[in-house]
Length: 300
Image 1 (tube, rainbow, N blue to C red):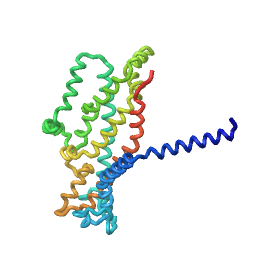
Image 2 (image 1 turned 180 degrees about the vertical axis):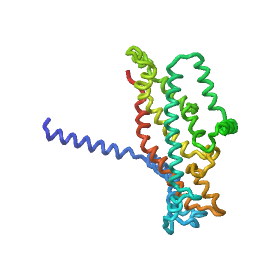
Image 3 (image 1 turned 45 degrees about the vertical axis):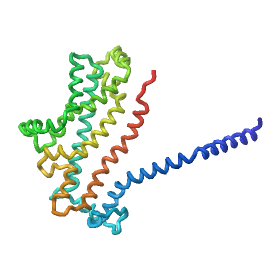
Image 4 (image 1 turned 90 degrees about the vertical axis):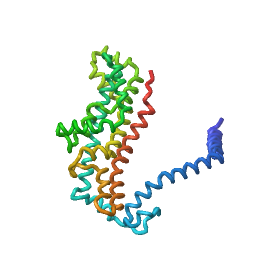
């Protein structure tokens, strides 16, 4: 077969593939995509409305479902950035960032160490302790609020970040410990045995072998911890008394309480500004999350 015939055959094959691709769009698929796009519009409409409402005067926000603003203004962002009660927006932002970042560090380190102990180290009562840890997931948070507050108040830790961060560094987040334990149990024990043959102890095995393979679980824990801590309202409200220590969720509430008529425009603007770090954090780390889930299986 000549080169010309080969080129003609290749072009015919491409044309046939394109024709098959066009034929795949059946009526059911068109209806499916239309329905999915309609659901997407319904889901994203509140987000778009909140974002565009930041450019509306407060009088046009309440009782108005119109998406596009009739009058564009940037005063809402000026109000949000100016802060509340003499405390600037950047103070609230800094407090939320400190709590979220330190919580991520504490949860990732402490949960990984605890999970390694439960998954790889045989010690007396391991199953009992693990069962007790899992049982704490069934314990309502409201049951321990008063005892915890009395304890931290007696220790002089109220009105500091310590009550909000101490548990993060002590592996009290049972959900993330359980997540990492289950992930480690899926890793072959031959890796531990090979490390022990090479003379590695538990610290070397954990740092050089388990920790790199644990990246999907670590990223998942980091994402959820950051989002939950950033959006936490009750914890900072309970333990923080000084306005200079308030976080963004409390600042959002202050827009409602500072006057008889709430500044909905400033509240919307601050809500959008508060969502940006969460969105960026998830956007940056979602690639590692997806890659980790896709490659978490090991091939022998």
